[in-house]
Image 1 (cartoon, rainbow, N blue to C red):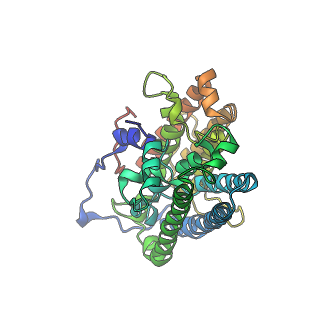
Image 2: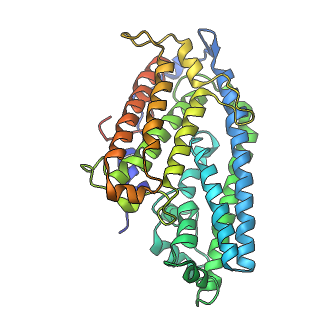
Image 3: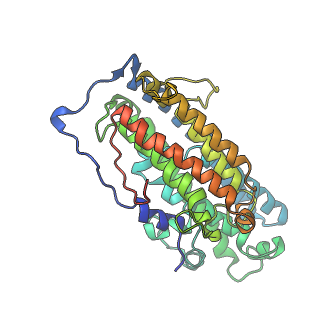
Length: 377
């Protein structure tokens, strides 16, 4: 049976364990620390990163939906090219919001319906034959989202002409077009639910600014670190490169498997989004506001040797990792076949970032990690 990155990650992150228990009689209700208000941090992140980021992403999805409709109405090579471009732009945009794995995004599990890779080709083909296939079932996580679209517009055949034939002259052409439409419609519906939930629960989310388990601030920190550790370091780099399997590459688990030349762009975009979120860079105008970094620095945590603030150390480590990312081939599939060492270099730098975030930052902030991993960190 085909293994997905999701299935592999579930081995490391599958169960939710609480490493420490909060006493409800002693729940932290303080909202300030050394002059930085956690509520202000949450307000800035929600109003200037999460909500506008989801709005920008929604527009890309709407464009993709239009390209799907145009292609279905009149399948030709120009329409296929336009569809691929819209899919690529939306997939890149998704990398900027996938880290919002807290609040409504986490509650509605949008990540798992959107970007579990590699997709399961046999499930997709079975669903094409079954118009009533229920995409809400976890069993269909890897039969939808961007990886499934990658397969449908880039991987159905080895040439563009043969891919196009699957939508025109093939016996299942109408069923394939219907499934293509079903995928984008399903995603639009779920995204709309997430955005509506954010708008409805914005104030309550921001006001829940304590540090105890169950607070919004704790949820943001846990969702942010888990995304970085499990889905960027692990999913994009560690699993394909075989970091957890004695560096034996698992090439078929590369993100953007069928398009081939997009994997580096997706990874760098996701990594930069993590940097921007940590540093509080507004999606609206690029300005910086109250952030995880500014809050952390306000706590006064410093490296005992250099006396440098921990918040600044983390930013610098992110920069070092980015420099290593740049050295990767645009095509991760080809890179892993040629030389795995550049992946090792990126992974090792990300390991240090994870240590700073997961151990040092959470300790300084008095935040408990509420997700489990078993990979030795």
